[in-house]
Image (cartoon, rainbow, N blue to C red; front, side):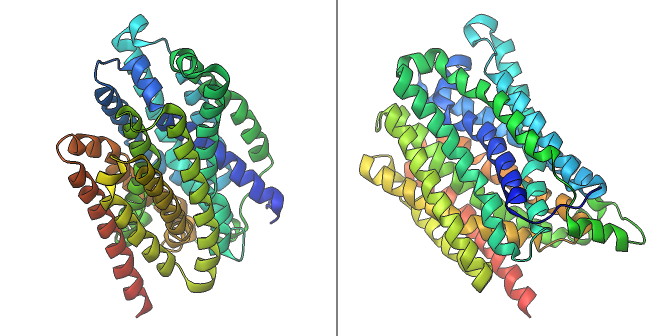
Length: 414
């Protein structure tokens, strides 16, 4: 395997593929109201959203399986091979969602197909993020700073998804987009994945991985290492990733879609809120990259989690007042960015090289499956009883995530 030279081409290749992967994932959440009308029709728009978010959550349950499979693949056969297959799988599954006939034509079969494709999306993403993080982490010297590049794929993918739907709404009108136009955004994934794979065909293997394989007298099973020898690190990573992910979906999926369903904001304003969230997230990612490189991971993670808790406890006001809604969306977007870059470096530093893809992918995906992926659905149910309790649920996840990071960080310094 050829070694990859460090440079802008490597960074562009990693980020471009990651952007497309996250575009595929976030499009399902951003277009939740349209997917609900097409596949889960109901007289109650909140019920439609709950069903879409439940399907969204089901996709998350495939992510740990993808993390184990693609993590093992990346640790055994290289990061490059894993990244190629994660992107191809997610792109094809996303494009196919755009051609599934609606419930009115196929009935329950349409729902089953959409759920299956969403599960394939989740399976592919299970290996994408961790492998991409490791690929860049193992190729650069300023590791914490360069995590900002791969982490920027998340807000850029979200921005892309919201921007495409916003553009379609402006060009076709909300009625046309709701009826059929949203499908164009899913079909676009097929073209985008070809572009992403073009970059990844050129990738060589990471320098650190190749050197670790040369030095290793015996290559251990990466699953046994990550889940056996490093189980404590795995647990800490699960709570960190899960709490951060829950707040992420709170700001860009739960609040905008519920505010739209409650007629607090228009469809266009909903997409504009998601765009603003993504922009603030990106700003936070860049700032925290420099903070983490200079001051370590703990400071920006702590700051971000404090802002998480504030945003969560403002839920009642955010769902009652349009101005406060936008403020909370901006706050959570920036807070997530502040946490997200050091989160990647923190997770990568927990595991040894030849078990890193498995460990990082597993921690991130299990956390996002158990805590983050279920958060929009659970909060939708709780908010139906009491809005503030929904915020308390989210704030509790943030407290758990921060407590784990601080406990591990303080112990590691001793």
